[in-house]
Length: 259
Image 1 (cartoon, helix red, strand yellow):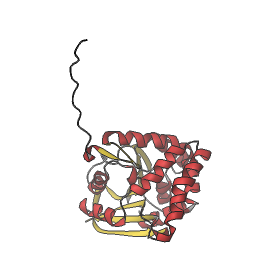
Image 2 (cartoon, one colour):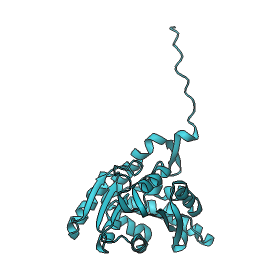
Image 3 (cartoon, helix red, strand yellow):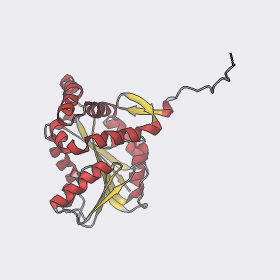
Image 4 (cartoon, rainbow, N blue to C red):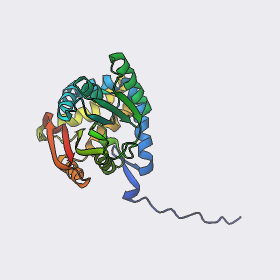
């Protein structure tokens, strides 16, 4: 029998080497690709599923969010995780000047471009496929940065917040609309049942994809709560940080300024 040289001794991965993908720890370097696969899968049915998942409430939340953004005709709004364009289109319809739709996922942006053309909104819109953790925009180049339902999918959330502040002009504002911590304890059992039973079942029936919607439900639970996210805003150098709960804290709008 030929002796076999011992292989390399592999050290177990530390917490710093892994990141949450829903409830599952995965290698940090692999999360972005896994999230991209999720959104490649859900892109064709994304808007229909948003209505079903939120019982239509996402439309109300987004209108409130766009009002809070308040981008005017002289402002450039950079919308991160722009997806299929809801925030950008609403902002444009309400008087925003230039709107840049930035997303890491080509499939989502392609859907957004088609929707923009069908609405006659192509003028004043730019589509950029990029990573929110490493934005390809100059320092101090935009007046507003927004991000709706995208931060929880990012590997390095602190890097996203630092990049948002970097590209803001002094006096500019960064706003995040994201799922947060429900503040009504009595509703938690109903909310959990909807998230972990109903959503994957709806995903399987409508989008032929239960696993992606199971991940989306799990990612909501892994998102920092209101206080923790506000602290992350401050640590990134944003000031006058506030948040506003909507629908009892199911979602919240966080805001911070570059002063």
